[in-house]
Amino acid sequence: METLNAAELLAALGHESRLAIFRLLVEAGPEGVVASAIGERLEMAPATLSFHLAHLSRVGLITGAREGRFIRYGASYPTMDDLIAFLTRNCCQGEVCLPQTACCDTTAKRRARAGESS
Image (cartoon, rainbow, N blue to C red):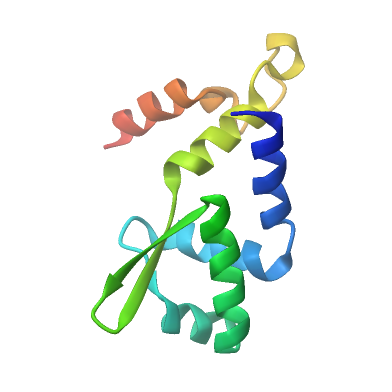
């Protein structure tokens, strides 16, 4: 991941509403959540929600899939994974300094660990 791309993703998450939407979608898992349910859970007006969903989609943090009259949104786990790997790569010159991420400081380690827990 390039620095400019990481900055764009972090800027998108730097807004309270977009961060709340992204966290909700991460917690929802791969099945995602329809837009109306996101709005209800976060008590967000449809126009405001639509604006934030469009921004998150544009930078690649979430994806949307049409289901009849509804759009189901989900977190883009590969993008999130790449961003976390970018942020923690070569942290502290290889010393273990982030106990919560030491076991998963690269994309390969996170994917291997996810395979262990399956």
